[in-house]
Length: 177
Image (tube, rainbow, N blue to C red; front, top):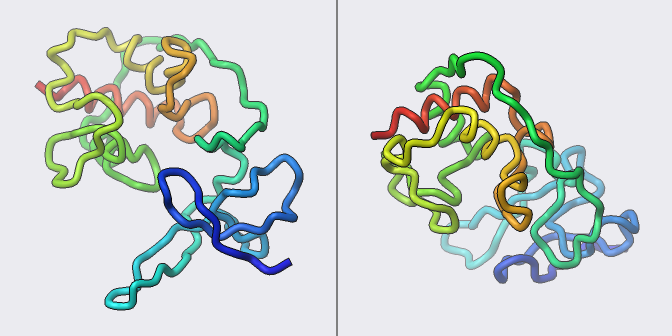
């Protein structure tokens, strides 16, 4: 079957093949013939066209935000922050800004980003909220523990970030005064 363009998400067009595995929704931006199936659109300058490039990681195992995605997901996972967070603020900043890792700026406003996301709360002065490190750790690890309808990725439960990555993000957020 030939790939074709179809609408996904907020009106974005995606490359998909409808004869994929039955559990995958038909509106994902994927190329089943590629080593990394997840595709990302890139604008071709001065052409009015999009070019599809492989994402840095294959995300087809992760649940999407699409209504057609009926795949089961792991249950929310309660975790405990053992010992002091011992996170690295600079490393946490890097994770928050990196599109291939935390990508916090896609949804949140953070210092130093000219094009912040607006889906999540602004995190500019996060430390002023007075959240304990353990609560921030849980929020990043799996926000569904606090809000079952959260669209924030369950970074720990889904294995997107390591324990140390989450600790580094906690240190970074707690440094924002």
